[in-house]
Amino acid sequence: MRSVSEELLTVGEVARRSGFATSAIRFYERSGLLSAQRTGGGQRRFDRGVLRRLAFIRAASNVGLTLDEVRAELESLPSARTPTKADWTKLSRHWRTRLDDEIAALIALRDGLDSCIGCGCLSLQRCRISNPGDVAANFGTGAVYLPDWLTEPHPES
Amino acid sequence: MRSVSEELLTVGEVARRSGFATSAIRFYERSGLLSAQRTGGGQRRFDRGVLRRLAFIRAASNVGLTLDEVRAELESLPSARTPTKADWTKLSRHWRTRLDDEIAALIALRDGLDSCIGCGCLSLQRCRISNPGDVAANFGTGAVYLPDWLTEPHPES
DNA sequence: CTAGAAGTTGAAGTCAACTTCAAGTCAAGG
DNA sequence: CCTTGACTTGAAGTTGACTTCAACTTCTAG
Image (cartoon, rainbow over all chains, first blue to last red; front, side):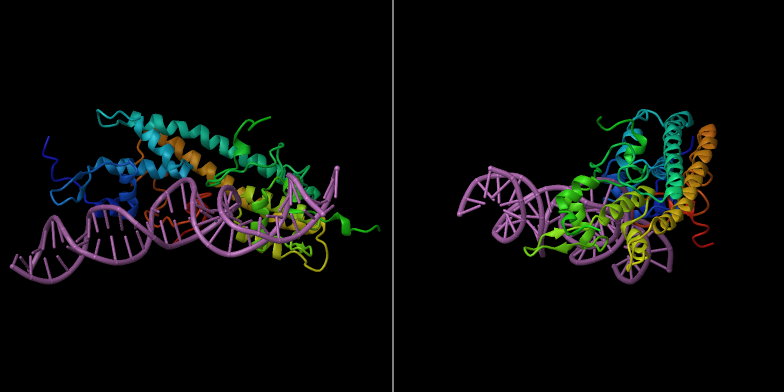
């Protein structure tokens, strides 16, 4: 084992290597997704492990997780030891299901659209695309990655 | 033909029948997606055709269009006559491609994930999920319905 | 005619995920 | 030692799609 103390990274370097903006990296630290040591002068110095965490964050958000979800997943990592491949694998396996669901939902939407194209209806009462199920109102706030009604069983029946 | 002048709807009624909140309906009018007559006292009175427009708006946003895109599509409708089935069909046919693309992109993501689950890498350099193509930086602002890099040919090579 | 439900407005708030800004302070090569 | 580029902070701004609020006004059933 040789000394690792020189291998600490500045925000700028982390930014360059990860492709995230420095502002995003600071934001992530503030939000508790990353942690960093500080120099005497108060500057951040990141452990190289931060790069893997950032890769995870990017991957997760590509899959459509919110930062809150990402934080939750990151917190489930062992804090004592450095996470292993298996640890990361376990987390990302979880996404597989999520992606499957999203794909299934989009396909359902497309198939519904096909039938609508046939009829040109777009009726509020009958069209699956404009009014699937009976969920008339209650579209909440928040980023619409996929409409909830497609991925959830039943809001309230 | 009997008189149609009594068949105008208040916002409240439109809300009830469409499932949109009254605030959303007013917002849509302000944004130029809907139009309404006014009573002497200044209240909105909507033509029944508004329900179809709202169905279209809902359908389009389920597919992932922004309101700007929806407005653009609505403006391409004939303004002189009442839009026919064929007019609506033409618009929604356009979505089919979009959905196909989105589905393909998600499937690509899932397949990439499958290979990553195998290796547990999540490397910034090699992993397709965390770093597809070479697009390291430049994730812009805006709602991430699907990551652009998945649906676009090449940002700049 | 009147009570009360429903309508009106503009301005401001919300949420997520960041970015931008101002006004500095720190670190490192020459 | 000094210059210069990189770093610091908290606060405020951004985008999209609405919602919420306050302070009225209008409609309509009885």
